Length: 186
Image 1: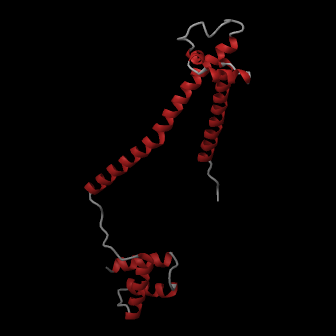
Image 2 (image 1 turned 90 degrees about the vertical axis):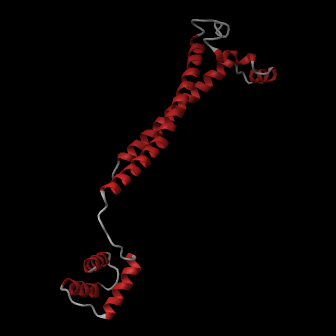
């Protein structure tokens, strides 16, 4: 009990709570094994309850308690890893596939003037996006043609936007990486 009081007084002194001179006097009295005056005891109890909370009996944890705590921490870490890594990787993979898919169509469109003259009729399974005009209602195709857009141009525009998005995402992740490695010196 005296050791716990000494530890509490030291913590109060270190945290600069209360009258440091009086706490030093109480610390000296406790270390010398002297009995505290009632007013000093009351002051010390008040300081401990205000700043440190009730004194709990401390004991060393058992091996089983440590194993249980380690298992709990491991489960929490696995949960954070799943939440933190698996979801973005899945979204990035889907976005990469869609970018590649649109890129396949866009590159063929850009090269079609030199290699193929009619990409839409070449092979519907190789270039399924060009079959969209057969699915889109006629009035929407007419509106697209009013703006000078064909399916080929739309695919190329969407692919270009995705490439720009990849560049922006790359810079965002690069900045996050640099910030995570930067440790300012105080």
